[in-house]
Length: 307
Image (tube, rainbow, N blue to C red; front, side):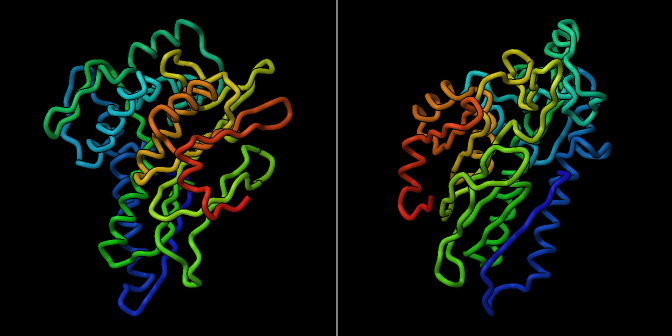
């Protein structure tokens, strides 16, 4: 994933040693990388992406699980979430096969868009099939899925109090040795320094933040975010700088944060309120930021929250 991970857990004499937990964790990370990496030519996903239009390929359960989760999010959001955008990500300069960050021509955009869309992707038993020369990119939910996989393994090993972080997607449960809950900071969307916007306590929830403040380019004074709107094939252009989602499933939190980032401050907030998502929005306002949170977010984390 080109990033870092950390696992913190409360140890007792009945639990495995750190070296065992580390080996179990890294086995899961290696499996996810081998299956889902868009940067490794020998990954399962890269092989599927190279397969021609009209072909089917047997893939592992993990890949199928993510595809099904992505299809559900796409359906729920009327297409605001899409796992098939890799041709467009490459075109804009944000994908694994990107050459340069630049604004593509209308013709290039139209050609790439013909190769995207969940309607062209089908699951048949253990096989994944594509109608067009489609390329999958699971990066918008793979880290959340990995956190959930590691957490499931920790529970099997008897670990009940933990904080797991994979590329910034987190999940925590239980209490620290001093009896205090795990606390995490929601970062302010700044690319010059790290500042905590809010601090929340986590117990049994995954948390994911999506933002446009670290991965973007500028051309002719216009800022182009790495988050693409599937409806236009172009980077989002609204004022939403970041959105954080909390959900018992880190996979779902990961996908929902991307989905709400695409929808933007007004549509995203309305969608999150309507569907009961615990979300925290940070919107640009001149030189500063305005924050809004959903009722579900405030309900979950008002008690004992630190400002």
